[in-house]
Length: 186
Image (cartoon, rainbow, N blue to C red; front, side, top):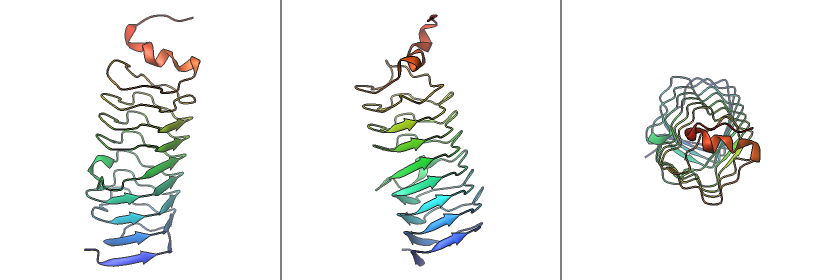
């Protein structure tokens, strides 16, 4: 099991993490870019102003984790331990990341950049994309039931290739649902 246990600690400007379990910890201004934090257990932790771009998360456990003002580009969340996966993102850059086949029910994305992010076959039911840029994000066989897209923008979602019952959209964003038909709307 885990080598070390950290509880209620704050880590500032770290560049690596020891294998172990981190519970109720805060990571502030850390640069884990290109690091391998595989197999680590993170529970009830907050990452603020951190760079996690291209981090490796193989079998990493993320339970009730908040990312705030973080750069998390090119990250394969689909390699995480899916058991108990619970994450939220606020003011983060998640471009080119992958959430392939993950269960992300009720996940909150607020003021995030999710350009070219892959949500293929993910379960995003009841998720919220508040003021998020979804330019070229991939939604394919994705469960989007009751997802709130009302303030999201730049998305292109094919209603015929996704489950979208009771998803919420603003009238201005409806064009993102009709894009494939190559029609003009005035």
